Length: 410
View 1: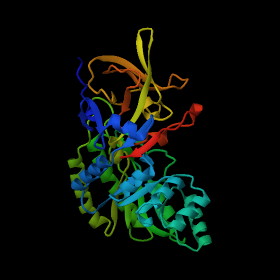
View 2: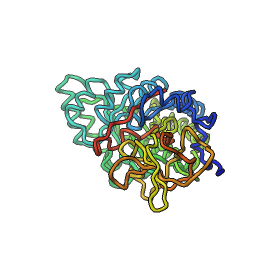
View 3: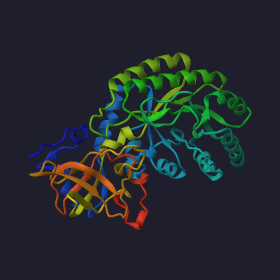
View 4: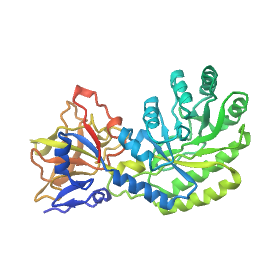
């Protein structure tokens, strides 16, 4: 019998009697509870443990914010809101989800380019902080605030003159649609002084999904230094500095988790320096994927085994329309397999090389390509691990009009 492949993701959930356990329950029982496949399941205890781990390493004065775009499921967001210090949203829909939680409105920030007038009005009326992405948006926010008779709470999102090295997604540095180029911020701040806007500070997000601890620490240091320089032109003292996050999670063999001890030590140093450079400012660390990705699984059922010219395909009731990232079609240049197991026979009696595909009429509909796994039969359960972030809402669920999967928080 082939042994289980070595991968950190395969140790996140316990296995008992060769069956994956999630939320203290065997996967086979959880399937009966849900009543159907496919589905996403998120383990609230895993999320709580991840946030507690961060709290142990972060300086007490660092605010921990949740980036709702990672997973906006309302029950999950409500759970996270009780354990964090704020929410960062990127749409009116996400704002409404965040406002339904215990989070105070002024602990919610609204980012993203191209905010429409009615979206700004909703944010202003709610009391959330608007991260201004352009000078045009600043003028528009001021107009809407005057119309409502409410002074909008605002921060300036800055496109830094550096990027997060080794990041899976670069959100700053170079030409970007996000935020205001750092060199243009002083002039914008001069104009902001003459407008009826309640200035809070800066949002500086250099990149995300980095497993390079040294690069993350460097980006955090450069972010605070940039904010200190820009503060010289601010209309009032900085009250909030959102330094983004950047902390990635391992998905593929050979990848290793970031060194949270080193990141925490670096943030301790930054916090001490900021007391001198930005007195009175709160520093927020904005994390999404790092909080929830490893707490989630995607489950689908094998419908049939099919051999084509010597290659084994497991055809399932799930696919890329539910989990685009696992299919490799959400930013991968060279497709790599997410960690995938047969959840009701993790080790199994026999092993084989198989590809896991869905019911869609496209060759892109693949969840695992030529991956070693326990031999599966029709009715067995395929589990895609690391699925708590950028899963369902990052996928083309309307493609070919198949039903959407269920989501549960357990």
